[in-house]
Image 1 (cartoon, helix red, strand yellow):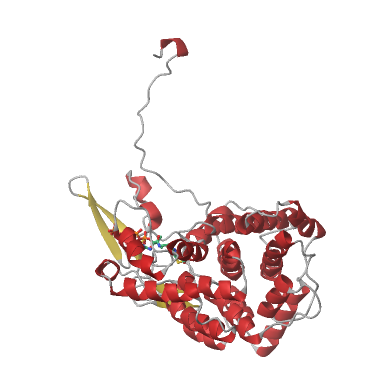
Image 2: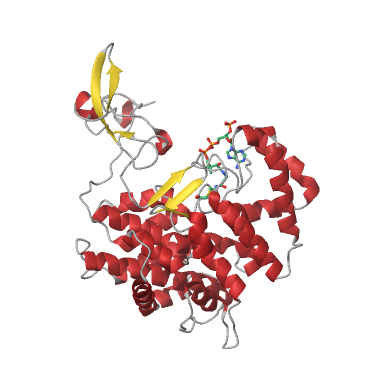
Length: 427
Ligand code: CMC
C-alpha cells in the first residue's frame, strides 16, 4: 500500500491495512471506509475519535487553545475584522478585497426583508413561546417559501441561499424579541450588521439610537460564535444536508440541535444557574454539588468537548463583557460578581484543574447579553444568528463536492432473531 498506512490486527493475527490521510494541521486520520468489507465497524459513541468529513474551513487545537478560521486566529479576527468579513472568509476562503466587501455587504443588505407569511407566522405563537422553538419554526418556514426553483447543484443558488440566511437571521431573531412585547415588525434601516440587529430588535420608535460600544460587542459575539468546525449542530446540518434536503430546513435542524444546554443552550443555562445559586455564600455548596458524582448538577459555562485548555473565544469575550458592563454602568452587577467569584473558586479547585475544565465562551456571553437587555431565553437565538455563516459554509462545502448520505452504523446488542408469539400465548 503506497503512502502512510496503519495496520489493524484482529482475529488472532489477521492484519488489515488501512490508508492514513494527512491533515494540514492536527491529527492525521485512519481511513476506515473499507473496514466494512472485512466484517467490522468501528465503535465511537459521541464521535470523539471520528472524522466524518474533510474540511478547509476551521481548525481547532483544543490542547493549545487555538481556533483558526481559514488559517486566521479568532483573536485577530475578533479584534480587527467584522462579522460580514468573517462571513465572506468562511464562505469563500479568503478575506474580501475592499470592492468584494462592499459587494457582499450590499448583497446582504438587499436581502434584509422577510416573506410576509414568515413575518405573520410569529403572531400565531403564544406570548410565552420559547424563542428557540420560534426560531426553529421560522427558519423551517423559510424552507417552505424558498423551495420552488431552488437547485442545490447550482453554485449561484447555493451562494444566494447563504446570503439570504445571513441577512434574514437577525430579523427572525428580532421577531422573537418583539413578539411577546406586542411590538410591530421592525422598520427597515441601513445600519451595519450588528447595529441593524440591535435596531431591528429594540427600536420602538424613531428615537432609538444604536450605542456603538454595544454594537461592537454584538459584532464580537456574532464573530466568536460564527463557526466551530464539526460540533453537534454543524454535524446535524451536514447530516440533514447529506440527504439533499432543502438547505433552510437543514439549518432549522442545526438550530434544534443547538438548543440543548450541553451546546448552545449553555449561555441561557449559565444565567439560570447564577439565579439558582442566588448569593455568593451559596457558591461553595454548588461547587461541591458539581463535584459529587451522584448529583447531575454541573457548572454551566465550564468545560468543553474540544478545548482542554483555555477557550480562546472566552478570553476575547471576557474582555468584551467588562467593556459592556463599564459602558452601561453595571460593572457592580450582582450576577457578574457571582460569576467572577465562581470562576475564581473553580479555577483553583483540584477537581476542575485535573479535568482541565475552564470557562467557555458562553460563561461570559450570557452575562454580556443580559446587560445588553437580551432576555435570557433568547441567548441561544443570538448564538444561532452568529453560527449561521458557519452552518451554511459547511453545508455549501459539502454539497459543492461529491458526498454520501450520512448513515452511521451501530453495535447491535438486542435480541437475536425469534418467532412471533400470539397474544393468547403470552402471560
Ligand atoms: N461541571 C462539573 N463537572 C464537569 C463539567 C462541568 N461543567 N464538565 C465536565 N465535568 C466533569 C465530568 O463530570 C467528568 O468527570 P469524571 O471524569 O469524574 O466523570 C469530566 O469532567 C469529563 O466530562 P465529560 O462530560 O466526559 O466531558 P465532555 O467533553 O463529554 O463534555 C461538555 C463537554 C461541554 C458537554 C461538558 O463540559 C459540560 O456539560 N459543560 C457544561 C455545559 C456547557 O457549558 N456547555 C457549553 C459548551 S461551549 C458551547 C459550544 O461550543 O457549544
